[in-house]
Amino acid sequence: MEVIRLNQVSLWRRTQEEFSYDLKKTVLSIAEGKFRRPAKKQVLDRIDFVVHAGEKVGIVGANGAGKSTLLKVICGILQPTQGHVRVAGQIAPLIELGAGFDLELSVRDNIVLYGVLLGFSRQEMKARIDSVLAFSELEEYALVPVKALSSGMAARLGFAIATDVQPDILILDEVLSVGDESFRNKCKQRIEQFWKADATVIVVSHDWQFIQQSCESAIWLEKGRVKQFGDAQQVVEAYLASTWTFRTQETKS
Amino acid sequence: MLLSTKTNRSWTEFQHYWELLQVLVSRNLKVRYRGSILGVYWSLLNPLLMTGVYTAIFGTAFAAYYGNSLLNYVLAVFTGLVVINFFSACTTQALWSVVSNGALLNKISLPTSVFPTSMVAANVFQFIVGVLPLLVIMTLINSRSLLNVLVLFLPLISLALVCLGIGLLTSSLFVFFRDLPYFYELTVFVLWLSSPIFYPAAIVPASVRSFLILNPLLPVIESIRQITLSGMHPDFHLIAQALLTGIIFWAIGFSCFRAWRHSFMDLL
Image (tube, rainbow over all chains, first blue to last red; front, side, top):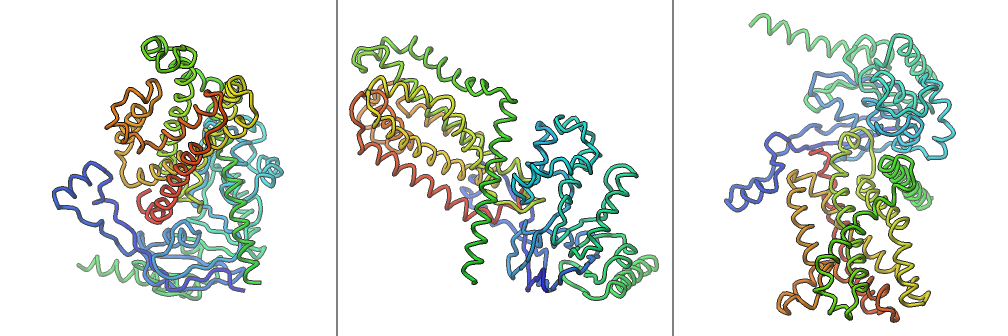
């Protein structure tokens, strides 16, 4: 069964540097006849691929190749300028955990808030407060405002909420490094559990060994294009080979 | 089959929106009042204090326009102030709502309009708990008619629609223009002075008065005063005018927001 399908997806984004955020400047530049429409840059270029249920797909590529942007398009955060994205099932985005917390609210309230932001219902989240607290080992802090937690604790909480229910599709931006050693093992176990339990996983990582070991297929992105899509071993090798020739050329010159 | 999955989907989307609205409003109120219900009544302090100040300064000078009654002047100022306070609180908070949640919108796919809407909804809740009982009591004493109390909700609904429309508009404009708060503060001040809150509309020269019609709050204030203070049957002509203004402003705000929201993500 197809879970994710990207059909000729292109994305153009405004470059922020030259854009004036000022009403005053904009009005004045129009008055002086100097107004230009903000320039746009192509970030993704006609991307096509299909992911089937239970598949684990790694995305590799240099910095700025559009890996994180591609994840955002799959999650529905960015709308493609052209093309279509089809996703069947619930997505759990683990892109930098804890973005939805309100620092003033208690841990309990934040569990409900963050869960609803992720698309669960309030009732569901209220029923899950205890299991989230147990997994994140924050039972004693249930009524404490989140601002009193350490950053590691907050990340633990974020991970626990986002993964309390097994999602159909798990999106990982970089392999997780949450909290201290013991919690990191716990996270790993939970992710491995998803891995075995037939969840569809898309992971962006610079850790190519991890992708070769844990993913079946891989996508190599270069300057917003799919350079290669196929068996993880081959794609990663090809990607590494390209960086090697690039480096040897550099050392020669 | 295709149709049913489509309606199902929009139903779950609506449910998600509703859930989001509930958690965001309750977060807003919790942070604002930290669990003390009495905190809502702090919001009454401002209009009551200002009513006192205006009455002390302008009361005797303007009483002649209010049937030579200082009490009528006090009530007229109070009703005007609660409307303009509600408006400025709603729209100013809504203005920041999209930009300040920018980091979140970059991480999770959410219906953007829920942020300005939740700001207006939180203020509506506060209004219902704090100010509305006072307005209802005033209406009952002055008109002795339940019809007036029931009808009172119509101009209030139109007030909420005006605020929602302008809130959607300012929140989306703020994404593009980060110096907007400065201009918006000026706009609110102009609206504030051009609404007959502490002065009778009759003192404005006739040539200027026709411009006051542009003020979206004018029909709302007039209609609320007519229902709560005049002691007469509600003037449905005024109510219709208020509702129409509300719908127009909501429609403008909503369509601008819809048209622009796709460009938000590049700038947040």
